[in-house]
Image (tube, rainbow, N blue to C red; front, side, top):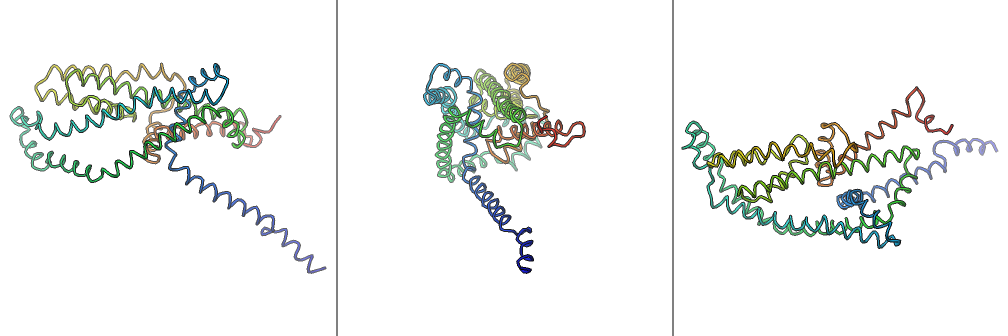
Length: 362
């Protein structure tokens, strides 16, 4: 009896059977969650863009849902509309980009460019030109790039096939995001340790951030690239689609902008003797391309997402580094989640009360 009485406290100690079972369950759950993350990680970009498309095209799906009783049919038609309006033109743009990139490389190989006459036009820059000509062999670098492309052609083909697979996964996930949107939100709300009002606030922040990122950054950047590419085409500059796309990419990142493309192009025209074209491109880039975002951003986004430039810059660049292309959306979303949680903690602990007391029912 005495020995049993001495063993019983040990059974109720830290290493009791119940605690060991609980720790084993926690460890097994963490392991399974980690494996699930590994399984989902390759498809993270596809799921991210599916989420972005679901938010952006949400009004289209809602319009169809009100007129079609069957959820599956409404979701399928919404995915079909998204494919026609967004993904179809994207393939055409990609085709033109590949063609114009090849044409641009061929033109650089065949033509020396206006900078070949630079020493005669500006004699004071002749020493700098001779140094650059001796240390920077443009033709050799172009040939090196071509050889690298030929060597990596199989991997490029594999990457293209994987991009197609990611696109199919995005469309597949988009269908279920449309169809089961309410069920997914209810499931997330039941998992997060927040009140209903706080969960709604967080979801709204994420929705506004995705909306603001797609419309406020990507759409405006696309318009800037389109305007810049049209001016390149009108002035007869080579590869207008390619350089318009590059301007759009530069416009996505805060601090940078389309000027990193059109300013060198204007200098190119001036050195080539086309002063009029150079002035036209400078005026168009300064007054139209660079300022159009100040007009379009308030119209498209309004007050949905108003964050400081520095955090947005870090979120976008850091997102691109960590998540790749999906970081354009995931970076700002993580920033918005952090801001929302900080606001919730600030409200919960206001007035000296604890976080638990702030959510206790009155």
